[in-house]
Image (cartoon, rainbow, N blue to C red):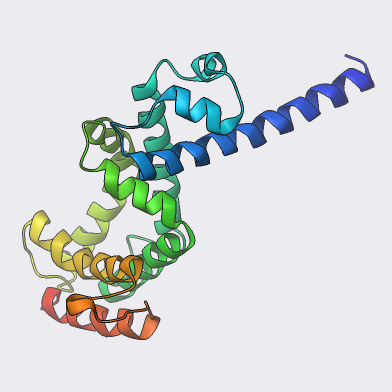
Length: 207
């Protein structure tokens, strides 16, 4: 391949990457706006300025596209939540880091976070969770086991732990998403409120 051909191919790859990103963002926007039943490959192709045939080069069908997008966004979120986190951390320190990472990801990736939340209630959830949970389940399991062994965490069921450990954080983020809390009270997410809530969660979970 001569130099001119190499530059041409490189530029094409850049353009393809940019177009791929645009297609994925458009897919999320349409899914949030029209719902999963209202989403179609035709709508996505039109919004992205490409032919429907081009989409079928990369995805077998609508279901394949949605699952692929869910896995990709789920892995992005998982990677973000694991930043600076170690299962060997003391429980309070590790949970604080998880809260900070999850809140930071949500606030910086609102549409993607809304998409991931919505897809949990669809027929696509199982296929996505099967892949995504493999990335963080062993780490979080080790984190909890270490905390229990070190008497830093009460031994409770997984469902109880997850509800108490992360439910309050996502309630605050839901308030932020709506711009209001209970009784239509205006609300803006703040680290001060997050840490106040985390302090109560730690009291509930630790011996």
